[in-house]
Image 1: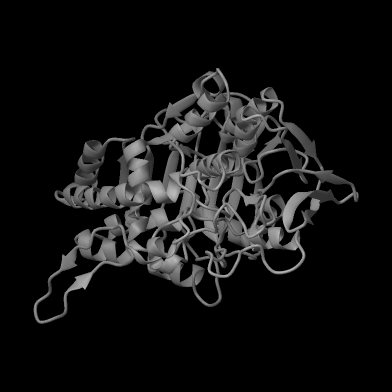
Image 2: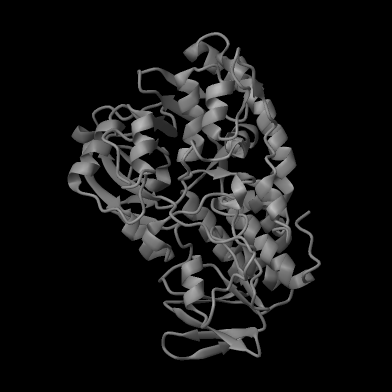
Length: 486
């Protein structure tokens, strides 16, 4: 939709074909008995991406269309030993003070030193990974580690340099297990193994703690609705329940689409917001990625989401987001990323308690969402859900006594909504690591065919989706000489 709105403003007639009955893909909504739950991301980072979208596509600014609020605190962490810490929003100094108070003097300074290095990684990688089309010589990004090397000197042993996020935690955070869990969670939340995620993944906590996290009144689905309405205002046409089964190829160029009802529509350009394996299935012949391009990511985990309708209102002062860390962090990673991926007995659970009156029938009820990173293709029993509820009780005391009903969304539900294999969820693009965490470019080997969304550059996440739309629109409007967003 971000691409559609921008292209419409540039003078194109734009038609969106969506096989589902509504817009938004993974950013869906579940409603029942006056409760409403979002099925995608619960919070918004880098709202500037969407401010730019609304600025470039109409007179009404983003904040005139949706109500955004900085969440305070940004997050509350409950560690395995029972220690708790609440981190303030977009306050580096405040984060340091909170860590010192909860974890001991010096914890804040170690974290601040790490964040200074994370800033260097952000400054070096922000533009090529977010604001520019993927470089033709993308191997430079694959081989170059933007995170500054910090050498660990050791007596009578070879010096060590952190190359993964887990090594950053081990070598640079003083061996503090709770600081390590805090850092590694940023990778796990995106479905990445911190033991293999590159040190450049330091940009993930940097983005959150520098630019802040925001809630959307009515949930992030309200943001999708605002973008949809902006598209309608720009005369973008939508065809719901319209499944595209083939991209029409004429003289080696994308020339339209064929629908499941066997009708066909001509087009000068085709923009596909689907998973790579789905896109490959829409064209006869070889994959749409030419040899030498970034290959699509494979084997990424999915998410298990448990939606809780509770009696009793949200207590005053409750954190919007709480991360309850696994009792055995190493064991959780071994199971999740091992040869036979499985859910840990006590997994890391993210608990969202919005406290938004628009999401509940009245003030005497609460809507809570639990999210766990889980293996793709996995199936789950009520016993598995019960284990997640047990962990969640550390953040929501008495949750079982308050429970009216719950709904479970599994990887199969994610797959049905997005078409991604096994319900895999794409992660943001990251530099280094041999390029395995980059995403394929927005252009393809077929002239006139472009890829947009989480499975194309610059990867998964709400701000990345917005940037993806801006990049595709730029490539179509300005051509291959387009050098990126300003």
